[in-house]
Structure formats: structure tokens, C-alpha cells
Length: 310
Image (cartoon, rainbow, N blue to C red; front, side):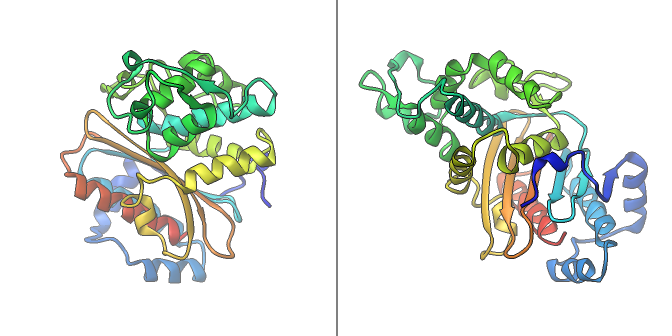
């Protein structure tokens, strides 16, 4: 199994810049290459990396807004990135980090997934499908709160988890301890979804999130049991069926965490098990377009298809 200790990547690194964007536009690619044609190029050699990078630029040009993507094939350590070092609002993708931080505390005997957290109706925030059913009662276990935040994107559950790890500052400090110098959380739900242009608060970069996800899923920062639990929550997510998952072969196993916010922000970060090949990671952040929800879902599915063709 490839571990995160192999970072920094030994990689074919394709980074889209303004010059590359101009080059891509000069190629005048009218539509996305089909999955079959890209897969054929992959079998023929690494030239498909440039084709995939150009198609990411074309997706952004076609739909408008700003698109940030990072893709890693862990078997070859090939990384393809489009605006990979630019900042994007985390939105609800932070919830997989919060759940992982809780699991790290469990590993250190500082937390117990069976511990119950009692909360009041006054603590509820918008979109809390699980926690709203238990407010003012016996509460929910830490494990149930993690599941609600991860699989249903329950906002109150996420806030209660943040409280348990020292708030946004505590989560950010934990990320720094793992070597993530970019990702930061400054606020709670729902304020963290404000997504104002040029606001550094509550942001990450596609490459930073990918590296952290790689560390959590394949590295040694979590025990094997906690890695398995985090993976199970990702796989059981119910909010991503129309996003990255929609673009990969149905026989592949996929786990993901989505996010959305103001300025038409739509995000998805995914772990993909492509049959007998090595695990793949994809982080996709999109903001500032006038695209409809269906168009954004189609864009995310196209990114999934491009990742499948690596």
C-alpha cells in the first residue's frame, strides 16, 4: 500500500497557468474528450496528463467562474492540478477534517465515540436533519454526530464536533501539526460559507486538501481502525451522487464529502478505488459562476470522468 510518507510527490505535475489556459484556448477543444479516448491515451503513455489538464481548463472556460482541481494517482504519484495552489472556500468539505480530528483524539484516548453530547434547540442552525430530531433530549453520541456531519452534512453536528476539538482554531492547529500549512477554519456553520472574494478565512487550496486527505486515508496519522472509520463515513455519504461519483465507473468504490456556499460555491473531495489500480484522490472546488445546479453537477461529473482516465 502506498503511504503518505511518500510525499512530497514524485510526480508528473501538470499545473495550469494563464499561459497554459491560452494554449488550451488556441487548441479550440470544442468538447470534453470521451472517457474511452482518454483511457486509450493513458494506456498508450503519459501524454494524457496534458490532455486532462487542458480539459480542466476547457471546463472552466465553458462554465465560467473559477475552478480548482487536484488529482492524484497514488500508484504512480502522478498529480494533475488546475489552479491547485489558489484559495477556495472550504464550505462543508471541512467536515471530513473535523471528523478526522475527532478520530485522532479517539486514538489518543482524549475522546470516545460513544460519549453523548447533549444540546438545546437554541444551538440548532439551518440544515440539521439529524440533530434537530434530538435537541433538548438525550443528545447524540460523538460517533453519531460524526456520521451526521459526514453523510448528511448536518451543520449543527459539525458545530458540536468543532466544540469538542477546540473550535475552528483547534481544528486549524491540528491541521498545522500534520503539515498542512494552507487549510484554515475561522468560523462555524453557517457563517463559514460566506465565500467573499479575496477573503482568506475558511479556505484551502485543492493541492493542500488533497495532500491532507492523502495523509488521513493512507498515512499513519490515524490508527488503522480510525482510517477505516473515516473511509466508511466517506463511502456512506448521501450528498455526492450527482457530483464526482457520477463520472466514475459504477463498479468503482467512491467516498466523498461535498460542500456548497455563497457565490455559487460547489465543492467535492473524493477518494476513489478504481478496481485493481491504486487508490485515487480528487479535490474539486468551484466558485463564482452563473451556472445552474444541474450544470455544476455535470461539471463535477466531467471532472470525475477525467480523473478516471488518469
